[in-house]
Length: 85
Length: 554
Image (cartoon, rainbow over all chains, first blue to last red; front, side, top):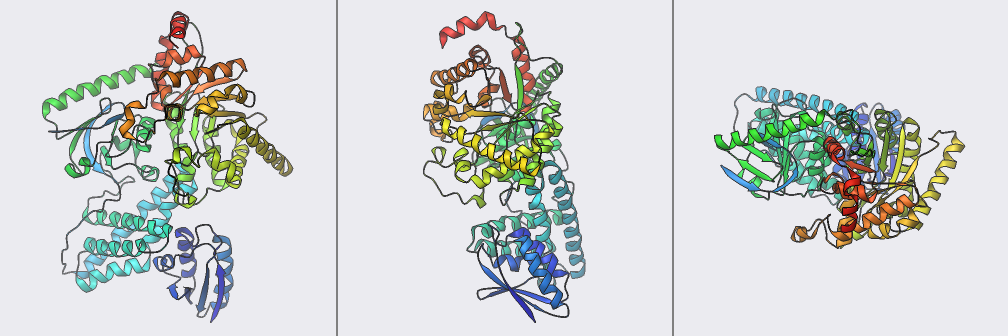
């Protein structure tokens, strides 16, 4: 299992478009990827689930990645977050 | 036959069938099915079809309005792929044996409800997107929605409460005969769009539009009188067909003026330009032989986006318009948000008196980051044509000086990067407050031109809120006080050797043209569809004959 924390920098937080891009990105990995904010957790491969976390600018989320490609997924997802939101 | 009275917001007559637009949900009845796998297949096909349409819409919007505004279609595509959404629909089909359209409707309502209960303004609004994609699927499943780009199979009259800029992108404009709205005024977005497209519009019909009429009803739209006639009898159809033909013949006659000069009988050359709100409107400007663009409202970039448009996105939109106008002057008005125009991401606090509040140049001089991004994009684009820039809601000369200082800084930064920009970019003040008109002698020394925005100038001079229907009769652009301010502004422009134009609604009011020419106005910027009519008017005037008489009246 790998995990990392990320704080949203975008003015609108993790809004629809980056959430959609994140889903596309997450879908390219075999690992199970989940996203947790406070006590709520969503599957990173499910758009509405991520959006329902309503992550705002300045809020922190935790990515948890479990599976065969968790190493590379973890590393690349962090980079993806930095570029997209 | 039923008659409805509204406001004639754009000239012309149309006869056609109504099509309601908007977030009104399509309702379907529950129906149970036997063959679950056939129903799942119907769902799969509808999703595939919807996805293809959204891809086309995305590509169309990219071309017409740029990246920022086309994002909505990409988001809809992503939503259509969402596993929770799809699995919920499939669940209703498999477990409850519901027909696909009813399953979509239930799932759509469920997710829309979930989003609207979220404690986040932005996410709350996404429930409208879910209703939108669900409607698209239901429409495809029931055959109510044809799968062409626009969703319309024939020419139609669009009916809505009011039209949002993002909704109008979806339209295949060649199929829209007219607009009818229950809300709105002569200066609402739908009215301006109709005038830009040159199609008739009746606005402010009231809620009876939705209550008494529905999709497919035959209607006559009289954009001259503001009359909407539903279910007309044969005699009425004949009467209006004749009226329509007559108007079309008039337009045909105007077409002959293409390529001729906008010059009075006594040889005074006038410039007739176009007002546009979108890069796609350039087609209409060229079609109507506009000499240039006198007002390009840059708000579309901000209003149709869900975040501040980037410098690059703006640069591309400005460049497109400049290139397509091939060296003809394009006057771009900097961001004019506030009052009735705002975007959710702006987080604009509610104001008791927005018309006199935080808007336009006041926002730009407060949020300099936003303004600098726009100015940089404009300067970078300036090498692709003949750019001029004007600033809205100016009330004092210090504001213009501050803007010019910012521009100097931007030029230095561009120089340092070796980024090219045009040697000469005309800067102008949009004169739309009495304060600017009264200080026009001072302002004239700072800029290259004035463009008078008569809509706001009338509102502020007469202290009449132009959105307040109750005092609508007091909103009079012909009022002597308004005309005197225009006269003063034009005179101060002349005395300081700069030019003065008019870009508000009054510019196209041919009953004022003689007066404006007498005052020394040399440029008119009007809706593209009004260009040739203005040219006809100008060519009919002999200024020397009427000048004296008009001067005594003012």
